[in-house]
Every structure is written in structure tokens, then in C-alpha cells.
Amino acid sequence: MAKGDNGVRFFQALLILGNVIIGMCGIALTAECIFFVSDQQTLYPLLEATNNDDIYGAAWIGIFVGFALFNLSVLGIIGVIKSNRTMLLVYIILMLVTYGFEVASCITAATHRDFFTPNLFLKQMLEKYQNLEPANNDDKWMSEGVTRTWDRLMLQNQCCGVNGPSDWQNYMSVFRSRNSDSEFPWPRQCCVMDVQGIPINLDGCKLGVSGYYNNKGCYDIISGPMDRHAWGVAWFGFAILCWTVST
Image (cartoon, rainbow, N blue to C red):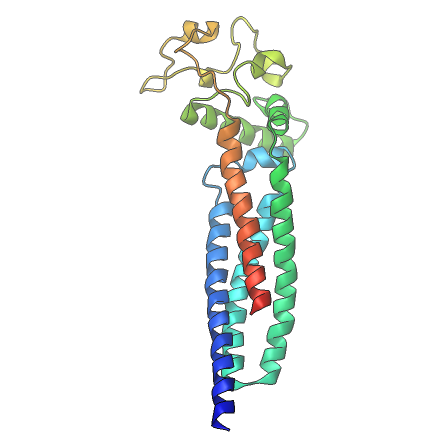
């Protein structure tokens, strides 16, 4: 009889340990997704302009799931300690619901990662950047956000366009329709700046003289953080799901 009691207690201890880990993973998932939706790189306007912001929806689901996992782990621990069948039944049902939400979050994050292509960002840059005559207030707000984001990206990261400065010359854009190629081949944010934020040689920048303009594109600056966060939301969530099933 004593051996049977020891076996039950050992099994309970394993369940409690499993739920402790689930709770800790839930807190970590919530923290990761909060960091993502806080948009540290302020790239959200670019994704919204391309109608590819579902990755943020996946992160919001991840916040809910992480919080739910933490609370369910507490419920599971209490249910195991008290050997309360009702609490354990509620725990199992709610865990299945939470599991379903996290599956949706993982799939959304993993699939939308594949849509971060140069052509996607090139299209919205050409259509939205410096668009002073939007169709409605929503387009105006979006165009202003895209313009601010591109200006900041090019200034802070010393890059120009998506693939490079030639984007502003090779494709018709709102910027090109408002500026002649001889006067403004690309935005001034593409110029190499001094410490005061003034082009060190504006004429050299306009002529494309090496050292006076930034000749690399901004795509890697955009796609790098988005890829890392998308994989983090997807695969960390998937790992939690695998642990939850085994527990």
C-alpha cells in the first residue's frame, strides 16, 4: 500500500513539475510577444501598407496564450494537489482550447514569414512614400506612416530604397512623379550625412559619387528583425505545444 502511495505521489510530482514548466513557458511567450508587438524597429507601418500585418495578430494571440498557459498551470497544480476531478476536467478542456489558439498563432507566424519579399516592400514604397494626395484619410495616415518609417530607416541605417538607390530611378513612383531625375534622383535621406544631419556634399549625392550617397538597400534591415520575430513566435510556441502534449 505504501509503495502504491509513493507511486501516486511521484506521478503527482511529475505533473506538478510539468505544469510549473508550462507556466514559466507561458510567461516567456507573453514577454516575447509583447516585445514583438511593441514594434521596437517601428516597422509596423510598412507591414500594414502591404496588408501583411497578420504576424502581429499572431503575436497578440501569443500574448493571450502565454497568459492563459500561466493561469492554467496554476489551476492544474492546484487540481493535482487536491486530486479534484472537476478542476482537472476544466483544466483539460481549457488547455485544449488554448492549444487550438496557439496552433493558429504558430501557423500564422510561420506562413507569413515567407511573404517578407523585396517586391512586397518595393511596391508599397513606390506607391505610398511621399504620397501627398491620398484617396481618403486612412490612406493619408498610412502614407504618412510609410514616409516617416522610410525616412528613419534610410537615415539611421545608411541605406537607400529596398534593393538600392536605383529603385528610385528604375520604377515609376509617387516620389519620381514629384521630382525630376536630374534634380532629385533619390530622397535626400539617401545622402551621407554629417553629425548635424546635413548632406556632406549634396551635389555629389545627386550625381551618385561614391562616398556621398548610400548605395546599399534597406531590405536586410527590414527583413532581418521580422524573420527573427516570426520564427520566435512560431517555433517557441510550437515547442510549448509539444511540451504541453507530453505533459
